[in-house]
Length: 136
Image (cartoon, rainbow, N blue to C red):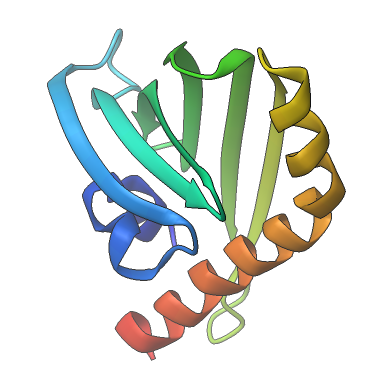
């Protein structure tokens, strides 16, 4: 699951509303535990809205952790993180995910706020289905 989430370039292939992904840069991580820092743009298309935002993704493969920081786009702020824990053999993984954000545009924030719970459910389901397809 860690590798699936770390593969930002593949998001448009399976994530709902993600119409494009572009890697701006890649560089070594800030210490021995962080293998890589990726700066990427994602384009999110939802109904009449189409927004691009940039983020910095720090990959921590030993800790099985991924941190994301907002760089630019329609948000006042955005921060998210993933933590992956292997379960017993044959039992898969436990995945913790959090996201905290606020849009600059109050109208966009209200529109997204109404559907946010359903959107997160669909995104998590898309990752689960992609994992089944790739790893089953």
